[in-house]
Every structure is written in C-alpha cells, then in structure tokens.
Image 1 (spheres, rainbow, N blue to C red):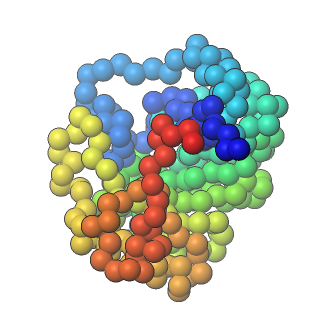
Image 2: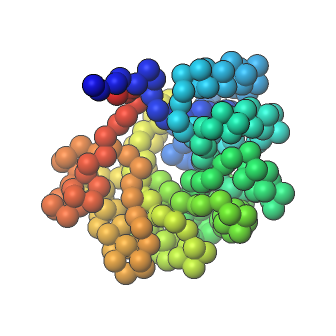
Length: 254
C-alpha cells in the first residue's frame, strides 16, 4: 500500500527579507530604490515553527535575505526544530560568520551551508553585491564554516557581469575545499525592469553548462545548477544528462 505524504517533506523558510548585499540579480528587487518598507516579522517565527513541526517536515533550509542578520532572534526556533529531529541547512553570503557563530550554527543543528559567491574577481564581486571587499569576507566565512564542521556548497548566480569568470571562480575555491560548486542562470527579479541588460542568452546558458562540466573534469569538483531548465536550454546530450533532469518541486507533497 502506497502512503501519501501529508505535507511537503522539505521547505525553505525565508526568515528575513533584509540583507547587507544589494545584488543585481536578487529577487528582492525593492532594494534598488522602490519606496516600500520591508521588515522582519519575528512574531511569525513561533507560528511557522509550530507548522513545520506539526506537518512533519523532514528538512528545512533557512534563507533570506541574509538569515544571519537575525540569527539571535531565530536561534530558539532552530533549537526547537533540531529537538524535533528536523534537519537544517542555511543559505547565506557568509559575511557575518565568526568562529563563535559557526559553532552556534552547528550546535543548533545546521549541517550544511549554501554560500553565494558572485565572482572570483574582487572588483566584479563588489560590483555585483554593491558591497566593498565582499569576496574576501565571503571566502573567510566559508573557511570558518568548514573549519567548524559545517559542509559548504557554493552557488554562483550567472549574469552578463560574471559569465566569463565561472571556471576561475571555481578554481579559486578548489583548495578550501568546498563540497560542490554550482552555477545558476539568474532569473528576472520582479519590479526590476532594467534586468534585461544582465540576462544571459540561451547560448551563454549552454556555455555555463560546458564550464561546469569542465570544472568537474579538470578541477575534480562536483558541480550542479540549482534551477530546473527547459529542454531547449541544452545543446548536447551530455549537458542534458548532467543538468536537465531537475524539476521544480514547489507545492508538491507526493
């Protein structure tokens, strides 16, 4: 007898819309001057925590914005999830990571971090994040996380600004070492009409896949892309076999 799940087995919890970066590709496009006030509603934390536990979710990814901005506020609820035997990971830019914070993340049950690395070139990274000295801060945070026992994967969101720097970015991270390197085509953020100038083409998307395959072969780093793509995005059978079988699982419970 096949049993149906009562809820999705995995959820992403956006604990805050706020971030110290203002990345050009960010879906929270209000950061580019839209006159709206966005705040973190901490009153929802216990409500959401109760729902996650009640619905027997298996795994939660803590995300944002930048979730480490509100770590002290969210920490008691991460402890509750951990005690309920729910596994957790975190999506972060890692710039707030210290040795003490990494230790606390591990102690509340966070086992894996997906860290955004926009580019392995300092100036381009700063241009994308709109934040000075961002690359050095990100790499330092990654090194601390790994030293603390947290597994780290990296995602590079690809736009016209960094399309030519995929391989060298992975090469820069090779010796840290990271578990996995991902490159993912940027999607158009809502409320950002000028994003078209940063969007990569179908041919550039294929080039992104080719670079990921080259990274895996030459640098011996596991590679992926964190998005489901239409079949027309792939120019070769090898690309499709490697990256073409991902599906969007949003809203699915079985």
